[in-house]
Image (tube, rainbow, N blue to C red; front, side, top):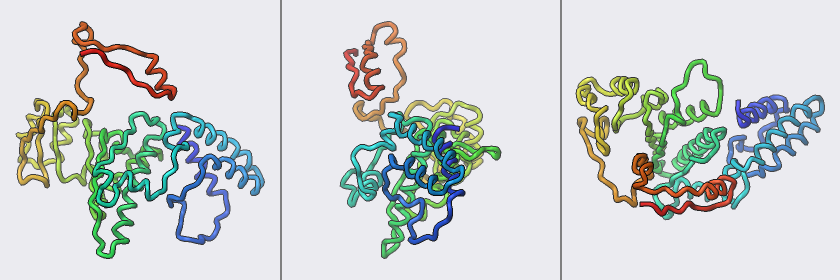
Length: 314
């Protein structure tokens, strides 16, 4: 169990020991109300001291864990200080402003977020976007939704297929969040695109709600078998070409097209392409292409000093 899950479990156990106060307002524990997270450990210890008994000893260990997490520089971008923003400002940045003045697409890069908290971060992002669209529709006099699409890249990392013997964890919480979005999101204008190279590892609930499939090259036998079970029997012959599809070609089938069709993606200009090309192993190893190495810059960036690595090669 990670420190994040341990703290979460400890907080759940603590809440059961505290007296239940009457609800004075409709604002509950899930309301996105701002508070200073650096005061959390002190606040819990103060409550424990007021309650008496052996609660203080239990809370002291929890306080150490919380302070340790807050001092972790890897988590500072998620739970640390930085420039404060209002909740409405956050929604405008990540969901979109009126007239999409800030652009119609928001890309959230989680590549360097520690694995201990990445599932919690993604689950919270998904829940906030979903609930914001629910409330948007409820507050509109005409009840019209705000059409929005969430795209999960490497989706098998966030909506991995669960097992009956799985214990509660941040990963299961993340999966359940997006299973709900897959089931109910359409009613509130929220669509979900899941992109994965391992469809057999995806949640069965999420896959069952997909109505359109864009199938790129699939080589793994287990993944091919799953795809065959998801699509109509009359396209089985077309799926035989999946292992040999060239780059930029895919099979489109489902609600978006009246019949399965082989499509080819437009070739992007080099400056618009993602940095996902295959490594030039041979060219670099033989010296045909140069890769300058500056580990000082890497080490400095790793410990929090911004910098770049110059590239003088071809």
